[in-house]
Length: 508
Image (cartoon, rainbow, N blue to C red):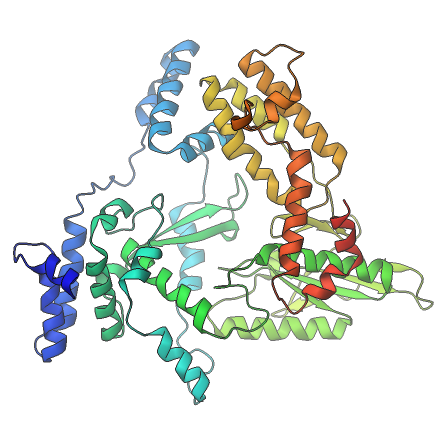
């Protein structure tokens, strides 16, 4: 309380108006929601963030004059552009170097995007279960009560938003929001909890559509990402932490859980497919269902009837929650065993159906992706990486040598860690990729050919360049993630670690 009064002791303080909200709540006078709305609006107005005008290209002058200048002048302009972007955001500058300028790429029209996404984003008129009585036992009631307990200053301090996150439509940046005292933030959040709902000042969000594949013109292949106010994200961060700690989740839950859910799901699918193929030689029917707003869902069953029933059930349930399956993007894989149980075959007749629409069936040569790892009918497969092409792009970029090393170490190599760790990889492929990296580093720094490899891969505290060696770190990361699954306490952890697939990965 003393800290709060120290902040509010001067009436000229910008946050003193928030005290009127507390008085209105305590004395049951006035309109606290309107007073809080005014304070939130004043925070956005005083942030001083100048909004960029929509429809104006950031580097239009360079693009417009690019055809009237020489190649050397274009290179100098590109260097100035990358250097200015590097000072502002290294991540965006690295994306420009590795992926090129995507501002000029062709995208679907706004009318086409709105026509596809508006029905999807519109809330249904009736949600299943609204008319049914909701029975909550005493334990669940206590959990909900703990979820809405007053927010403390310590929670506000420990769960602050990241500094590199984007501002919302109100223009409040993480830097400006971080300068507001934690006691003021806690007071505002508790006022919102007391009112029972968020206010319009922080509910507006900006939705951007990120393409899942380069050059696509299908609106369904774009991933919607909504960016609300940093104030609302801070509140949600606190509530999400409380949900993870206080609420009792389903054992299959991954959201709000501090666990490596991606490694768990990929490892579980790979182990099940290998077990059905080698150990038990039993039929396996699988559906890769794509949902709007969500990641892909894998459904497994030992009979065709069971898989079709699961498809009907999930289609009915997700539709009741405002989502829907996309039959065009879904696929199924049906593996049967002959009468003697010694051979397996992929069945292509009698396709499965989603919402009375036939779903594409995969054959032995087809592939599908699950959580960015490529699978076929036998399990994870190796997919060649475009490392050589990206290294050539870094070499051609008009940047300094230390910038090339930074892009390589921080932004390029981490792109491949996920697929190399959880997908199918060989030591030979990892060594070949390390060889490409060392060759590029030697050319950038003009190192002699007899320069030892240890100088490139050794840490900086040992006198090296600190470039990671994929052949060394990928097996270690894979082993650590599998050990983390074993220690996670998941209901399938013990069976997964004892499976043949896990033993092969641990011994790799």
